[in-house]
Length: 505
Figure 1: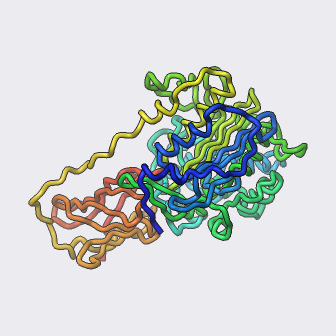
Figure 2: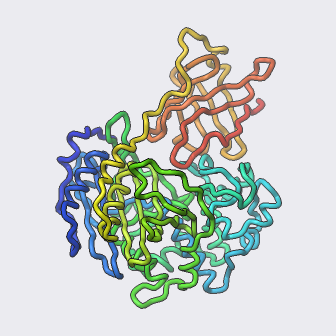
Figure 3: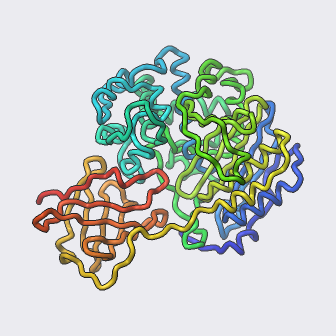
């Protein structure tokens, strides 16, 4: 089900009858949030603020689904995406507390069949390396293996051995999901319980996060769930929930502002919740300690106020400073949703912002407004600053060249192609058009339009995937031997990692 809705009509759906816990007074906050939701085309949003172990603000805005009247409240479920990584770090911290692992354990001590591309790295990589994005692989490496695929977690881990590094081990920071899948698989190797079972039993239930779920099957049976939305051709449309179960330890959790506020309470209290120790204070501090430095680029003049002096990654958390204050934060993104959790430990202060559209600037606009308020800084026009920071429209990399002919007949492009990471990719003629399809990833199915020579434009059937190009490359004898993609990078997928060869018949 896909519904279009223009920006001019979006404000009409911002119904404000939410469940509210609001002992704070920030003049104009509701109007500020509504105005920015309209500008950024965000149908629904939920916020919770924790201060001194109390939830002092908990509120929903807008609707769960565009074109409908069901309001968002603080129990509405949203995807938290990569914020899920922090739960995996906590689960491992619990096992470290119990003496069942050490942070510097070699991964192969717990997963003997695990392999990296480099045999030396295979032997040396540790749990700490998994959690801090310093494996030597490039950013978002391995996304083509898991994104929308039918590969299990075990199969994903097996296929990591084909991923080629781009830097030396431990030398550079490069954010990715796939190593957190490996980290999550250590849990069943030690406990005999899946990551999902362990997280439910040891973390979600003790924190009273009763509406939080790790699986799509459970989510499908629940009520009060926000729908994902994307902006396509200047129109907000609904897209289906993407199943992220196969990378659960990195990105699969759905939660509410109310539940996430309990999570933030525990984190700000260094692992203690309502007098009960969930994990040790020692390991809470280890999670929040800089483990891997991240290069800091210069911000534009109007963003200088948020220019950090340092940035690092801990265990499942980004660490940086804001106006002299340490900030612990992590954002999360899946198709059609964005989320942010941020904490200021010195102030015992935490924020949860959940949205059902892909516009990340929305949560930053609110976060910095709230941060300034609580830290006592003068008000700053963050909404105007982030509105100005709009991404430039993408330009087609391949200029259209008219009056060129295909080098071959349609039938000659057909066949089975193969990448050892993702498996078979078929090219067939369907209704007089070439159709390309990844065997293990149904969302990677595209119709091919001839562009120039042996280059075709890809129009993917999945609306979340932007158009790209594919080139059929030939050998010196004019025989097609390879496929090469020129595809705009998705949120967590880089097609440049693929090495696709035509299978011999």
